[in-house]
Length: 125
Image (tube, rainbow, N blue to C red; front, top):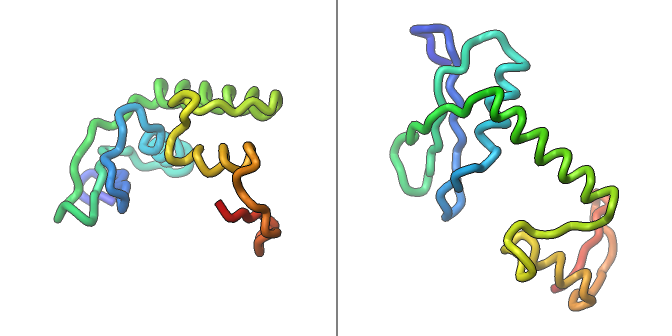
């Protein structure tokens, strides 16, 4: 909260090793939520890489209209993928770090060990 002009600022605390990629939807989603759920102006945005930096790094605040379209576009693609059961990684056939475990499950290279506390499937990869 910025008392001087009664606005709020998005600060995204980053704990991972990688810098946020250009085109990431995380800040746009936060901005959309803040604009929809509270009355104060959103005056800025920052990433704070807590393991590397002593203070937040300011970034350009995403355009709200463009953010809304980008989020809706991705949501539509996810909806279609779910309906068709066709999940393709944007990084291509090799997948990305997030897809590889699921690729192993689908290809039978993982052992199903049961359901977790929240009824999620658990595998040994």
